[in-house]
Image (tube, rainbow, N blue to C red; front, side, top):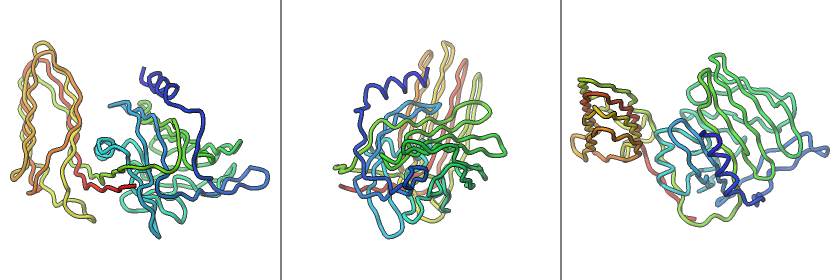
Length: 308
């Protein structure tokens, strides 16, 4: 059902053209694809499917310096969602020299240019220590890459020269598909605001009734190890409350805001939000009764923005 919905979004939004900057000079016979050269304002719109949600989001080159391209989202809510659910591996920084992504501040080659059939390399991504990648085909300005890890995680993606980045990206493991990105449209000359939230995982837990009580202060932290204090925390909440279920969740900073969610019978929902706080000392309380199931994911976030 999720994949069918994403396909429908693609058909509705695709304009039938990719108006992006050239993606590099290929070999004379088209069997080799060179690295692209991006510019500020270049953009790509993707239909994204993850287990938690289906969204259409636009990635924008917000700034270019001597070392890195800085990529954000055209909507702040998409940047916040990425901070807690990580639905686009390219958001953040991409190194100008070789188009490497950054995983925990270490450059990783999702693509090793020039791309040609049979080329192979390895990288770390999504916390998976090693993916072994190879180019399985190059044709019509597109290079298809497959990457597998010893743990069974798998990536399949296609680099598209015309758009200057990926036309599709699929991540899966032994339990099924975890992420699917499909390019809808791409172009240059974006105007407006672009946002990036540098995230750091703080907490993830699932709770079930009946008669469940939970209290934790595990959120005490000093912010990002390299970039300093969080501006706020981003949370993703899933609640599946049956007819006999009820409960309450409280997330608060000792010197800041408090999130209070009251769960009522038959009320199931998903919610993305932020909570601010200055102390860095967070408390989580959950109480559930009856048929009630709750999942909570929390990440710290440092917010960046560009005006183009």
